[in-house]
Image (cartoon, rainbow, N blue to C red; front, side):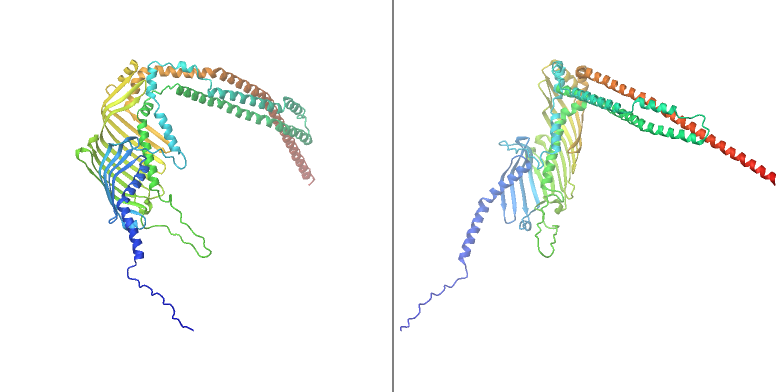
Length: 638
């Protein structure tokens, strides 16, 4: 048997200190990451920031250049153009550069904390190379709110061409032609028809109720029974008791039969009073018909309040819409305490207790502690300085309110004396925002105040100053604006010579215009107060030309409405009085019988009680005399 040696096993290779199978993949990953952050990261981050800023602004935002540094976690963005949503061909703001560094401790926790940022070279109202994209209006999660609906209604009212309607009336427009085709669908006519039907139904009900009441014969029968009650020559108490018993029987029947008459009378009085009140409602509906026809005829109100709303209402509404938009964005980005907090997931366990602790320390998701605004551009484009403090996504955790201040001038645009302060306090469960802004001077040219086919009014040149403040507290609103326009040059134009003369005479000599506006209340119930001396001047001037025509047109509308329903209302009045008189007459006859019978019953009762008392007194006197006689006899015996 051969003992062959076993085949030799290959010796394992000895590994060195460097593990190339791990280093090579890691080097590839790090190389790819380095290439990405070197060539692509800044571009991708710029697109992300542009998208987020566009959503916040409601219109396109462009960033010309963006550069990042991982070493100190810094970002520098240049040439930032923020489109004006109302005028896409121009920028609302254009910022030369923004620079800031982030804290690595916060970044490693998935948060962004910026200790200080610098915002430089700020310009306003600059032209764009191409029109910016404007996002469609966003609808809130719960649909169109009552506040937005109200502002839409106010927008429709303010956009109404009141001055154009007045000018058309001055030019000789005749509302009579339109009146001839109106009036068939008056609400007052339908209301009168309903009143007629209601009166017919009530008349049937009352006739049925009157027929069910006790008849006059019933009370006559009780009167006969009363006459047969023996009231005279009653010699003893037994007779009196018999008469009293019969009297009480009559009284019981009387009460049973007279009660329905009294109840019916009271109910009739109430029903007729209610029906008469419906005539007051008819007068109110007639006024509504008159107002509706006046609106359909576009008969304007010749008063300063209406004219002020037509002249400057849209300006104030625009400021209010801006305030509402900024408020919604602020409360969405910086939710107040206790709002939109993510619930902590609690896992069920068979044993033990779960303890959940709220976050009281750490960093918000985003926190800009301080930003310095500085703009010193050559050529007089801007001279601006300011600060933004504590811009954060979680004011409750940060424990600080956002405070922003700015002041400066934009000489190239003719704007000087700009001062603004913004405070957003979302550190409590009741959000509050306050803003105060002042512009010392700004230039105005070609500002249209009235534009219609019949008349035009333009502020061709002026210098303006404005003070604006807004206080928003939860759902309450208090917005104020005070405008002063000096060195005013007004231009009027109209097709009609009469209108041109009227407008020119109304504003002649007006070199300064002031506007005081205030909106208070809640978003669902706003109170508008606007006053301006321009409206006062137009009212005085136009009243001389138009008051007679306006009054005549209103009188013709009232005459039309009253003519349509006059005969019908008169017939209803007469029918109501006739039915009421007939019912009252029937009740009055029975009430007279009731009163007479009640008087007779009371008199009979009094006579019986008097006779009863007299018999009792006689018996008592007889007893006294008998006792005295017995006492005398007793004395004689002794």
